[in-house]
Length: 208
View (spheres, rainbow, N blue to C red):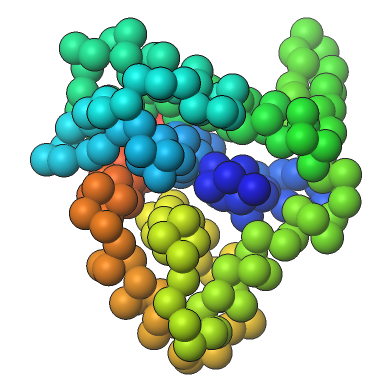
């Protein structure tokens, strides 16, 4: 499962699909996950607050391909914060649809008066709960996590989801989390830092 997919499941209730975070924090965390996937794929990098495309070849994943096309098509915009804000507007729907196509979630429409809202409900609660459980186990182990897992942990912390992963973890897990994020590769560490700053600013301003 990809970074943004696992973040989505951690950020939503594993039975009802209800968001656990402020909508802005959810969107920004997912947006960062999508950029992080492209960094891990080797298509982009982040330096000095800027996003740089380094490989224009299309990724295998359709959503990653779409995001890369947007980055290439709007090359005049390179600021990480700009892209986080832009992608956050649609990231919950985009990632929710990706998980629905994968058979992990079910798209559900609810009609109220003149408005229709869409939510994504887990098909199997155990599958939806697995990413948080898995990360907790990663933190309890002695061996270092993989880079994708370290990035996911960084995004979880940046968005304010730490308690969802660490709620039953011991002191070792809390200590290791504080060591893992600073040890991320530079582009990913910078992405996490910008995400944390963007989440803090959005929540403070009360952005929906």
